[in-house]
Image (cartoon, rainbow over all chains, first blue to last red):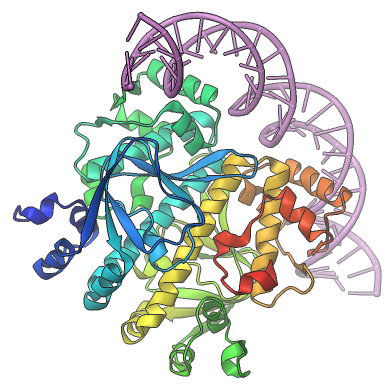
Length: 250
Length: 250
DNA sequence: CGCACTCTTGACCGAGATCAACATTCGTGG
DNA sequence: CCACGAATGTTGATCTCGGTCAAGAGTGCG
């Protein structure tokens, strides 16, 4: 299968949706016609906060963001890393109140889309409803894998798993060559995504380097031994529901 | 707001959906008209397994089930408890391959519904699409809370949180009076839902009893001090997105 | 060039795991 | 209806993975 190259291929939302099901020209145009308000946001800023009642959703057009919660003990848990093409608060289309916060990790370009525009899109294009619903289901699947990762894998395996997922998702979006990518998360971010302490994450990463599974410095992650990293991370990309993109990316 | 009592009120799917948005008679009838194949399943049986490609989804009509994964180290992580009204594998409507298994805890009555019937329902009733999509989003929200619970709360708080969620969800469905309910999960089930060992769960439960927050024996959970349990569990039901049902149930 | 953020290292600690009995409950068949 | 075996719950002893604390080393940005 191959597509003609077009403006559509440069639109991250279309690219993301098309990894699961190909869209018609008609549907692509509908997406390109969405009124999107772009905004550049600096690193480490909240985009939306738990408790907000958004009237719009937003897509990540550049950079890395994360969804997180703060517990009563003021501990942060990162729930997902969001990369180009993700619509992290899609849920707000159907759920009034946000149950998490979303903030940038690196500087991000985001595109806000009013809910009415999305509702309009869905009512006119049932297959796009399907595609967007599907995206939210994949997000839920990733959450389930994270529950498992945090609940039942030891630190070393857990860290490997998070790295595997991150790079595969970037590869699917064409943002990583040869298992190497920019990784703007600090060790504190990684710790909060893994339910570990910063110090321990530091030690685990050193061990991964010592065993020559990865290289990681200056925000560049390079996987030296993909097979090895997958195995130590108990990583099976099935939960990402990549379909045909799976073989190429993972 | 009050409804006339009718057959619809005894249908758990309708009851569940109506906790978020009221349905028209027309919509209720469409749900009641769904061809449902009921089946009784014994305790501790798998209903569907990771890797399956179901052509139908199922609703829990009676009993308690759970979704779970088994890691490469053969450890089980429970991802959710499913009670009456839940459609645990709704996702299979849009995602080919199941990324988790679902099994019974107590004996269950389940109702299978072919995907075509659900697709038909959605195409005829956009508001039901909305309602079902919404349910899957709430499920995702619960997953996020579980990531947080397992990742960033200590055992004592973590256990309290799981108990709080379970009883609130039962209350919403009218299955628990006065913060007391049947709880068929064994300590092993609880351990696998909390990412803890059985032994430690046992000790944590004893501590909860000793501090007179709960009573728990012979499969009956009674909360003696709801406020106290909520506080130790850092439990805020906002993530369940109950809407108006929230005040009554939590 | 200096201050703040991030990473690293070492020492020590503790929550929760593991192991190994033993007790209790429950379901099942005689 | 009872008995018995399996599943579940309980307890104590010990261990360990990962947390905490504290200090220093890089790094980078204003």
